Image (cartoon, rainbow, N blue to C red; front, side, top):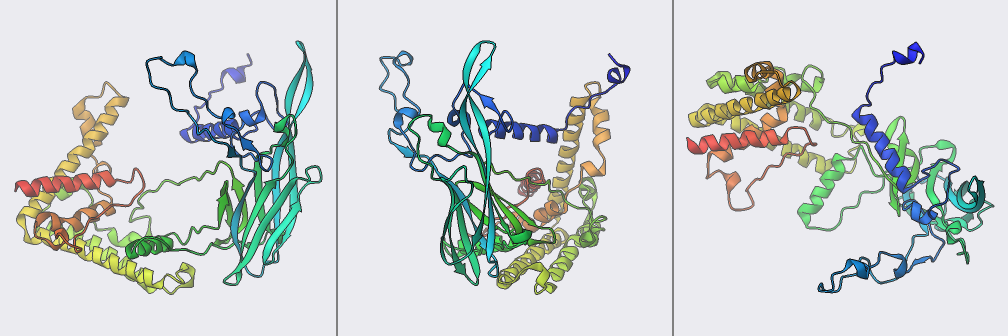
Length: 484
């Protein structure tokens, strides 16, 4: 073996690499092609091999005999009641089309539709064991230019070799723009034999503007259903996610959207996906030193051990920056409500209601801090909760360290873990504790009333962000204040 190979050290793959490879393998197994662009296989039919991203010839039905059957007599105890069938004993249709609906700028005259798919043909093959029959993949591609007009679109033929593979749809005007639905349709006739040859696999439909122009716009927001509170919540959510709009909705498939490089409010391409995926980035809390918007939190005391030791004005002084920094941030948000770059057109009333809600939260945090100055039992319970959470945090870290190093003594592991970064609140956790202190301290507080003024607070933060710790902190406070 060459020396350079002997000295090569193979690094283990990261969890991210493993996850992406696992996803690729699962998609290849369910959608294909598992064996490459021109794969060949002979042990199974294509419609049995690939379950996703396929279109049947128009009007194809699945007979009950082809669906899951009831267990055979050999598998059934005669004393048992008759088994229920595993699938409905009815004939069902197989999908013969897929597509999407998009919202297109009103000055757009044409869209370019590109479709890709594959069919499988039966071929003979020679091997050492003699001749055999195999299924061979035939990749195909088609394209059509769609002129937008009121009414039905097409049918457009996409590929001369597949006259039965068509593009159909419909367009209509909506608030000066176009609402367009386009479908790739497998209108090929069903063959008398080798039915799989008329099926399409790995089907994908892509829509683009002429010369790659960003012609796709966010779909109009629709608020419907539910009572007034539910509709208000829908509008609040639409406002909160306005920078990540919905450009398209899939029919028989998901969609993947490519936004314009310079703005997230326009898209240059919409593509159907039979196995839609979305990467959710990890969400963490930025530090006051790294984020200018959080500069006001620089004096905030987040260390649980320190909060468990401070008393009186020293304790309050370490918490007050949370109120002032939040108030300054709210003021900054309110001052820019009319800024076009914030895309709040149509959401002004919702944005102002959100500002009011934020100010109420800020006032509740301030009330929690004020309580610690006027109620000695509340202050003691708050300090107890911080001491409890401090011990909980460092013992978890110590346990993790001892799992990795069995020779590490407990006392040493605890000492190593007892550092500020392992025993500090995140600002949103501390805010959640403080705004709930008054209601947890006073059973007659209005937030605990048995009417519409009652308040139930729910933390909304991604997995791993620290919701459980915040709830545990409040639990520790509640245990202490009730005992006191």
